[in-house]
Length: 216
Image (cartoon, rainbow, N blue to C red):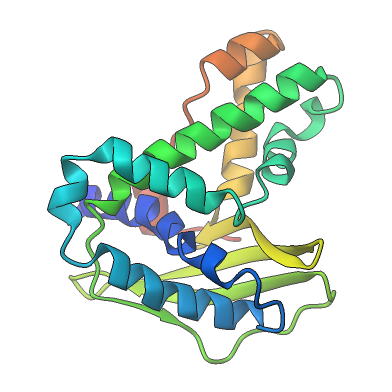
């Protein structure tokens, strides 16, 4: 049960982004203010409706898809995950991978929303200052029902006057780097066949890895 809850924790963390589009126009807000307000808004949207969404996943996936449109920079993330293979990919392959990657996240987040089990989600008061005006990180903590505290850090970049999430670090595990390594391994396993890798893309993250943590 603990392992299932931890998997749900990982999936559910991304759903904290759902409310950010409501705040995107308020560009005078600091990133941590946006994240904190988004958490309050999200809790209002899902509280008491887990059972309903469990029976209406298509509806939930549509909500997630629409919400992530203005929140996550999927093109930036997709290029980062492809890493050194991005340059040799065709424009069509790049676009197709971005859409495939997006779909896998939407499916994961939607399922995680109805099983996410937590006691408290809190954005830390003392945030580390960024070196660059167009980059920021927001540190927070998720407290599971058993009292375990999981540190979470969102990486954001300023794009055309709007903050967008480009990476997440959960309990010291850099998810962007983890997915990049998996893409690299898939390319090796398929002899650099882009289409085969994209068609079979199904990123995984070992529950034990999140539980034990790592270095960012």
